[in-house]
Length: 395
Ligand code: CTP
Image (tube, rainbow, N blue to C red; front, top):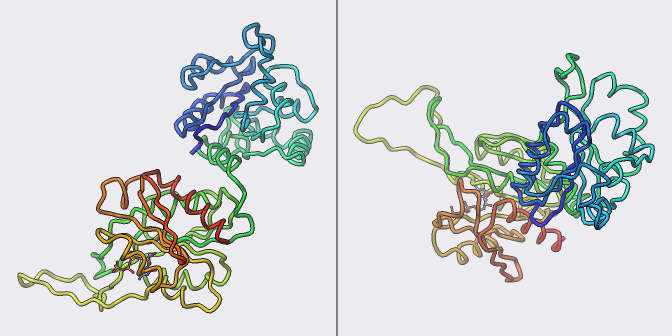
């Protein structure tokens, strides 16, 4: 996700410095080339060797290092960065930046960079609410500095309140958003994800193998790119993406109601959910007891949500999915026209590296005018980005 991105991670002196190690791991895992700058106080909490080992890059500590300054190290670092993160950021570094002070490697690099700067503060609650600090943060926000607010909790100093460094996952998410194009600002995108569950009795239900991963990847990516996202999700075991409006549903009927209620406010609807095509004719109020050697159940068709959306007079841009085990393009093309969608993402679910539960997907995108785009095997996050790129150009 962050492949080929060069990120500077500035670590300042607070007990939360150890959490920057976890953040570094998340950044490198997603492909970023991370260069760590530690202030003198940060080195009191964690050793540079930890960051050096995990980043596989030398850690910068001194402004006047003879080796790094052969090529004016702070300027080179600042020039080449795509993003600068300061986590944890003390009241001191924030005050220095707000006052234009550049007296060590980190503050000088911040002053010299044209890259976006993302600040994750961590401090005592009284420092955080101090009017001097508040004014510094507001000033930096006005200048376009980005902030990941601290969390509420028990602080290392014993106080309760706001000031705890945001979770590494939240800082990582903000970093990905800061590096994402903002090309979906102004769009409201509804995404359906996961399976539906059709109950037979209070104990049993019929469902399918959908994990929701593709729909959740689309929701995360669209939100990062600036869209307002409504995620209508069947039962899955995935965390709700940050900043997304989550509407949990269980059955195909509930999904239909939830989608149709919001369709009017959407510019785009992506139907990634694996909706049950049939539901039991009746739901028994009591547990169905074991009787003969065979059991027959009667099912009735559920409403086709995508087709309903396709028949709306003033409909949003519609993207459907087609999960097929054979005749991929023929069946997917038929769905595109029959359901009156604008794009169909066709997956061959007979492959072990595509479809349900796995993190990768191999898809063909089909469009109304007959165009086809083959997507090679890629992560569901990357495929989400490709699908959204196409939506942006189609809109
Ligand atoms: N879909 C829907 N409502 C349904 C069934 C499917 O909105 N009741 C949507 C899915 O979310 C997907 C697309 O239609 O975007 C295709 O779903 P898929 O299950 O592949 O196809 P079906 O139309 O159900 O046809 P079949 O089961 O015969 O392949």
